[in-house]
Image (cartoon, rainbow over all chains, first blue to last red; front, side, top):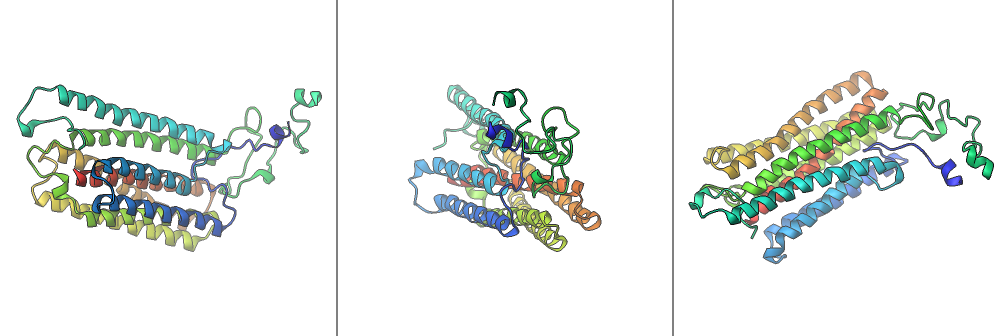
Length: 133
Length: 234
């Protein structure tokens, strides 16, 4: 009961610096985000330009690093949280991610199948995607 | 407790149980001076403040923008190996240039965040300064991208060369157009902050600009990963 009455009913918009109470705290959040994002970016480039990762695993490694960096940006730059006052923002994002996954995943899936089932053509005219390595 | 369950507000520690007036205690530091008015709404607490509504609406727009980008990404992913005998990404892309562009955009996202902190404490000097650095980094990004495009076109690898290059120029160019529009917006925001100060409507516009700029950087993460790095690996 006390939870219901003392709960803050306000929602928080995306990009609100909710938890930061001082300038230093606000800047610190952005510095943490910058350092993490820079590390993840450097890791992405290292995956390609060094031999750290086994060749066929490179696409998976790149996607993982990219998703991680997007998460860092969402949390530290866009201040998205999973708190109750952020539910609307997170739900909208989840819906956007669903549509993006359907469009990209569906396109690749369908075009890959079309490509496999297509009659052999002249090399330069191949339209569909070749399987990624 | 049964009485308070039928009358939910009787336990609220307030002389204003129906929240008819402004409630300064609940104001957020990031409210942008908009204040809150609990009296205008329907039901408990009234509608969200205008700042929340504007930011949420702009968030929905940005997500729809991301969905549009995803269609361009899907086209590029499908057409990436359709080089029609022309050059592939591995022969065309300059990793140094991509790394510089990535750094510019990431740092500009950071300084854009600093401008939001500066604006939250109403510092004209630091807001203008961080917005200016954001704009310079954005311009540098665009300059490098334009140089890349010119080099490719000079090599005969323009958008009309192959389906791969058409989709490449579409998706990267679309992002570049967003950055250009963002720079125009940034310039007008600097002028508006300078002339009008940190009134509520300006704070809302600054918030929307921040969201826009950060989302452009998120899209660039997908771009350098899918288009450049994976294209390099192919």
